[in-house]
Length: 116
Image (cartoon, rainbow, N blue to C red; front, side, top):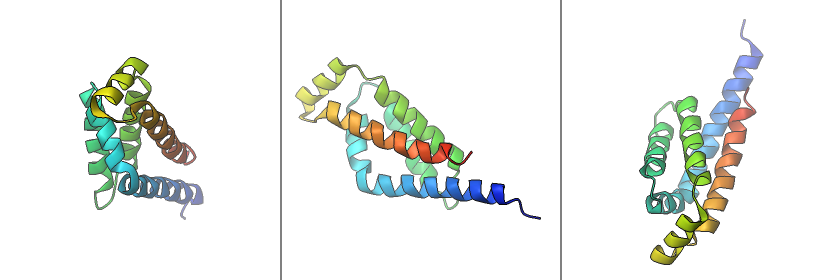
């Protein structure tokens, strides 16, 4: 007999991965620009991991969630002075971008938490 809780959890996680993929299609370039501009290479690496995970034929929801967690951590650790420097040097609204992308990543992560 199939456990409906397992099916529901799997569907919620599948939907969370799909929402993440959709978000990356729409806003991935902007997130890439921001993470590339940061002094921390691990943010860009986490984005590459995220792209790799969602592009699999059967994406691993745990890998997608972990990459999102890493990206959120990197964004939240950025000092205002670093973001100000990036804004000046690269003509990017880095503070606004970090807040916006951080909020969107948090929203995506919330979808995974609702699966449990």
